[in-house]
Image (cartoon, rainbow, N blue to C red):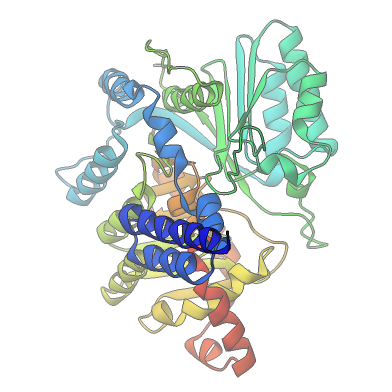
Length: 476
């Protein structure tokens, strides 16, 4: 019996290691899992089974892949109906043509003109606007969020959704199966009591076994009546009600959209809803608002650990390579891939103004420590890094040349780059870019700049701690 158990354990170790060798695309991740499986009997293969296998891709193949084809056809028709914004002259600005080609090829979606974008700072501005729009809805309300707290703010949203449902509207809510546990009682309980239809994205369960810890749906969107859409990095809860005088709360930015871009957002929501329900994506034309509300040219880009793997990394890298003047990045979690590090280094060496704004005090200290271990790689080439004081800033902003903005749910870390399902919106708009640049400059004015000496002068125990956290970068 002892020899039988030993043989079984060895077989399990080698099977797990062989699977990692065959299917892991990143050699560092493959090496890490192979060593873990071979050197930690039983536990290593179990960890690999729980955390290392991308089951979502297999499940996604069971659903029809028509949405991408459908999206492209609808988007092209919609953009043909609306004249292009004057400054998007690809002959005069070939760099814009390059940027458009990168995103269009990666996303399989066309640019849509005629949009208006409004910036809403923190829950103090965003929540009243979102709740008012729900109350005025006439046809449908679609909401997706990662964290849905059940405190005062969360209950206000539940009540507004319940009233909309009782008015006979098509109300649907997507909750992430892990993000829902950030609050107790869970939001699903309140939604169920209120009669609001909702689904959970890959919830963990024992029967049948579904130990999904990674592969989270991190997208945030609220779409109402084909008239208005909201997206950004903001979850739902009291945490985003900020009092800057007391340095309390979590800062973030939400964006309100009017125009054809809402059609692309609705497609993403519908596809996620169908996935959670286990049904096929409906092959039908989703109506696009064709009236022009503004001058912003936009496109939705989705990414995730299925067919969309590595999209975000390619978008970031490609846009930085197209920059002519400046790159501004604001993110709570900064653990870029080596390709992104190289792009930032080259941009700074070309003389571009490259600025990265990070929180001085992170809600995940180990991420902050890991980041400090790699900052020397960009500081030594002239990239400017700033730590902004509390309250903690959860904003995700990416700005190129006072014209191009990338906004949405994605951070610049391995989870957003490879493990989470994310949605971002790219916007060609000088008005939005000027607003966001003013916000950047305001934050930079309140921040302390990090120097190479600051990083190099860390005491040895601190350097060891930061280096140890950095080793776990692929899993942070």
